[in-house]
Amino acid sequence: MRLFILCFFIATVSMFSQEDLLAKEYSKNGEFQKALVAYQELYKNSSNNNAYFLELIKTHQQLEQFDQAEALLVNQIERVKYPALYVELGYNFQLKNDLESANSNYNKAISFLDENPNYAYSVGKFFENRSLLDQAITTYEKAMIIKPAMNFNLQLSRIYGEQGDVEKMFNSYLGFIDTNTSYLNTIKRAMSDFISDDSENDNNIILKRLLLKKIQQEPNLLWNELLSWLFIQQKDYNKAFAQEKAIFNRQPESLERIEELAFTAMNDQAYEVAKSIFTYLTETAQNPDVQIGAHYNLLQIALKTETDLKIIEDTYLELFERFGKFNQTINLQVSYAHFLAFYKHEPKAATTFLKESLKLPLSDLEEGTVKLELGDILVLQEKFNEALIYFTQIQRNLKNSTLSQEARFKVAQTSYYKGDFKWAESQLKILKSSTSQLIANDALDLMLLITDNKFEDSTQAALKLYAKADLMAFQNKPNEAIALLNSILENYKGQSIEDQALYKQGKLFETKKQYDKAVINYQKIIANFKDDILADDAYFALAELFENQLQDSQKAKENYEQIIFNYQDSIYFVDARKRFRVLRGDNLN
Image (tube, rainbow, N blue to C red; front, side, top):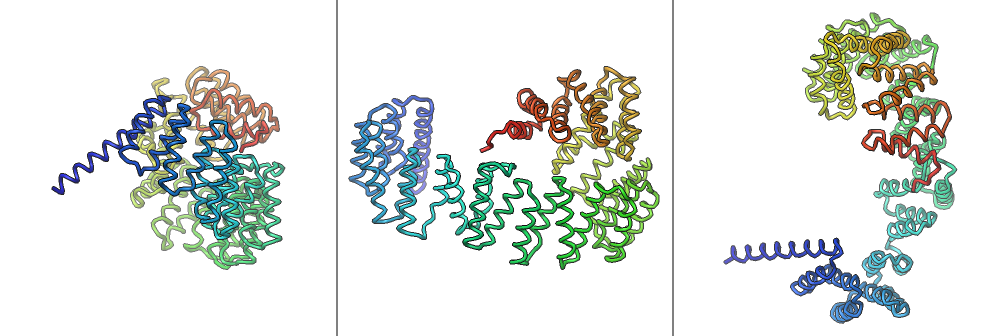
């Protein structure tokens, strides 16, 4: 008997589910007469289901059967004490152009808050559902006055945003977050839709003014944090740093936020302010790991901005003198070896230095990090087989790790450099599904380069020359790489390698700040290879050059626009659309 009841219940639920889906489909397709019959049947069999009742009302209204909807609502109001139904009744009168009766019912719904302010949740929501935003605002504000512990600022923020009242929206968001700090990231995301990276943007100015006022009137580190966040969106990293220092001085628990700001500035190539922040960390941090990390990053900035290699080397040596050469400084040791090999062109000294590092009692991960750099330095010297041994050891010792996948890519890349394209391709096929998106993308790019060009001729002469030029670029020999790419462009014109050579050479021109030459290369790709895989890369590279280096916003817009209209599946599409709109002066709300 119990089994029979259970089966009957399951069958009934399934039947109602199917009828519900059918009714929704009728409404979606505008077949309101059929939807009406379906919802009448559903409501008849489940008269306590409020969702069916409301859908029945809406369907009557779609059919302009307002009297029938009114009769149902009046009957339901008599049966159930649910103030939100007066909103529906009022809206039904509004559809009949009886605004007096409509407003009377709206006011009646709101008046129930005097009896119980908790009714604001449903009454306000019903007003919102019917786009009666002014009445929704009145409802939420009244509830908060009657019962101050209630917080409808989130709902009010959303409504003010829809109405375009940005100042009230920001104020409500701040009011909400004041007592609901766990929602801080959610509120940041919501507000980010209304601000831009332009500090002169009206909305940015409004939010800045509100936050400064909060800081003055009701000191709370929350407002400093939000102001710092706003400055970061505007790339005003110095101002953000000032706020973060103020927070740390009042609450010196952790330097993580300041460290994160330093990385943000460095990644955005705001090197001067990044140097200031990392220097502050070296002077303020009590934890040696934080100090060493800050010194390490200061050196990474110096490698990008300093020309005096002796100053950089002296800094490395001073740090080893101060902190020693042991596990804690292993990243610094790897960085120094890289400096010796790739900047001072002393690969033998770098190799000797790293082999000493390997004698330390390292973890598997630390050992793998050293061996990865050691392999790169051996590739730099074109000692490919020895490099492959180190990369293979990493794969064996750190299976399924990101470092292991990076080592596999190095194996493929090294095989490519030495002209073993078949083995390189087999490794790259495995890496296409790497858990690291960056490695997967690099693997796919290299694999496409090989597969697109390996059948051009039986000797694969052009591809071997290109791989040699690629190696020269890796060896930090841009002039030699550019010359070899010129040879490819002269001797293999019209072959599939041509656009790759043009693009690679264009990127090398950029590193040498020869921007006009880079522009010519990218334009040649667009003119002659518009349907090939590098066309969107060329457009994006051109757009960035015109925007950031050549200060020609009109030409930048034109190239971003090409991606937007002709390359919707490009990986650059989202960035191109955003940059185009910024350059055009759009409000990105």
